[in-house]
Structures are given as C-alpha cells and as structure tokens.
Length: 367
Ligand SMILES: Cc1cc2nc3c(=O)[nH]c(=O)nc-3n(C[C@H](O)[C@H](O)[C@H](O)COP(=O)(O)OP(=O)(O)OC[C@H]3O[C@@H](n4cnc5c(N)ncnc54)[C@H](O)[C@@H]3O)c2cc1C
Image (cartoon, rainbow, N blue to C red; front, top):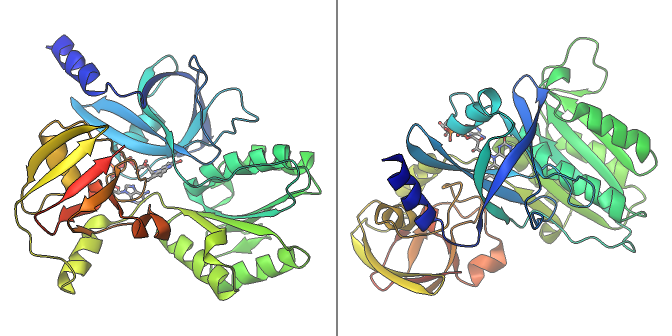
C-alpha cells in the first residue's frame, strides 16, 4: 500500500521543478520559531534572495504544501534555510517546530517569487525594509545579499515584533550591525515590550513609519522598499510609504497570509462575482492539454487536482503565484490577486488557486 502510494506520488511529481532536500540542522530562534537548514543538493539549490520554496509533506496520510521564504543568502550562506513561525492550530508550522528532526528528507518545489532584486557592486542605493514577525525571513536573505554585494549601498530594517524574546534572528542582526556599522541599521518596534524597553513601542502606525524613514532618508536619493509581515502591518506601511510620495514600483511586498474565504464573501455580497456554474475548461500544463469540468463553486486548481491533473501549486490563497497561468481566452473571477503585479494582470495572468470560471470558453496555459 505504502509503495503504491509512493509510486503514484513519484509519477505525479515528475516535473523538474521538484527536488528532495535533506534537513541538516534545526535552530530554535525563539520560543515559537525554528530555522531549518538543508544540505546542499547536487547541483546546488539555485535561488534568489527573498524567494520562497514550497515544502510538500505527507501529514496524516494527506499531501500538504506550504510556502516558506528562504532566510539565507546564496551569496553568504553555505546551506539554504527557511524559518518557520508557529501558527496556532497550524498543521505544518507546528510539525516543523515540534517534530521535524535533522536527517529527514523533504520534497520541495524549487524556489520561486518576485520579492527579490538583482545586485551589482556599482549600485549605490538604500534598502529600506519593513518587516513584522516571520516577515523578517525573506528580508534577512535580501539584507545579507545587499550588504555583501553592494559595498556602497545601505540597509535599514524597521522590524516589528511582539517582545524582546520574540525577535527572530536577534543575534544575527546584532552581528551584522557590528560588521557593517556604517551601512546597516535595525530599528525595532515592539508591541508588548518589557518595562525596560526604550525603543519604539505599540502598534506600528503611519506616523512611526514616516518619522523613522524621514530621519533615515534625509540624505538618500535611491531607496528601494521591501515590506513583509502580517496583513494589517503591511497595509499601514504601504499606505505610509505611498503618502510620503514613494512610487509604487519601488515598493516590493510579500504577503504570507490572506483570509481568502472572507474576501470571497465580501466580493459576493457586493455583487462582484459571476453566477457559479459548472464549466468545461482547457488547461495546458507544460505543453499537455487537459479538458475538464470545474464544478460550480470550485476553483480551477481544486477541480484540476481532484482529477489528478499535475498543476503546480503551493499556498492555495492567491499569494505565492506557484499556480500562475496565462488566460488565453474566456473570463475568470480571481478572488485574490495579491501575488501578481499590475503588469502581470494586464498581460492576462491569473492564479488558478483563487480563480473560478466566469465564462464558457476558458483556455489557460501554465508553463
Ligand atoms: C510566499 C509565502 C512565503 C511564506 N514564508 C513564510 C516564512 O518564511 N515563515 C513562516 O513562518 N511562514 C511563511 N509563510 C506562511 C506559511 O506558508 C504557512 O501559511 C504558515 O506556516 C501556516 O501554515 P500551517 O500549516 O501551520 O497552518 P494551516 O494549517 O494552514 O492554518 C491553520 C489556521 O491558521 C490560519 N493561518 C494560517 N496562516 C496564518 C498566518 N500566517 N496568520 C494568521 N493565521 C494564519 C489558517 O487560516 C487556519 O485557520 C509564507 C507564505 C507565503 C504565501
């Protein structure tokens, strides 16, 4: 039975975007966050700082996938790593924090994502990064890469945590500040600090973002912004940046979580969704055509997976873009498009995990 299951899984994951990584080391960062470092595969894992990988696990006899940003830098760290913060009642984050041990081999989908930049030694820019909680993970990889690759660039992180002992990568951040004293700065904001805390405290609000950045940016002309953290914190940070006149295209953002059911309910209530009907669609995955019915109420990804169509996916909430496809014809209702840029949407890209058919002539290409 086990072998049959395994064989089916191997057949299904035949694409070259899949890979196995062996857990090398697990480091406890805080009471509810662990970093997991992997042995380098052969050839080495290729990734850009800030990208995420998808872990694929069998938990309780069921395949589950989750996205985790790489917290390491390919330019600095010998072993790729992710950091996982416990979510109350969460299946995978609790497994990582409580049960995962070195030596275990984990199947992954290779790194993806646009929350990154290219580096060049001649660049002279200011990486202004706003992070909350586990949102520090991709930011850590980007910050380390910027500091080593761009000797004339600066990095400032405004980092929101609950309390002193919940600051993820606290020691690493302090070491980097010592190493790059003139170019690297971290401003901590704690929502529930101890009474001895003298830094920023309370919820992050627009004024705090503006005050912190106005001081930092006084003499800088070439900033690039990165924002990653809980939904509310990201909204606050982005609104503050926009109200300071920062151009949208200079603000890169990565969301880890969205309540897609609540979003769908709001769209439905405001009459923005098409009637839910069963529709036949065509999806071309890596050149192979699949025609299938999407039952009323299901997303395109859900219907495809029910029929064992080998469609790539990860977060299943419209954030990570693993399931991105190009809509060649027809119309869909995309409930969450946060993972896509405005230009991708204009070019016709959709996220199959959050899209439901809204016409009968749908053709999608996934590459
Ligand atoms: C691109 C991307 C990168 C990510 N990178 C990281 C990372 O570097 N580190 C990290 O710890 N996580 C990261 N995440 C989040 C991660 O993929 C999982 O969603 C998270 O670990 C929860 O999974 P779970 O299986 O434990 O919870 P689930 O079993 O999926 O969910 C349990 C319950 O918690 C809710 N929930 C799930 N996630 C959250 C959340 N973040 N906030 C509030 N409620 C939630 C669910 O709606 C559900 O009710 C990333 C997500 C994306 C899309």
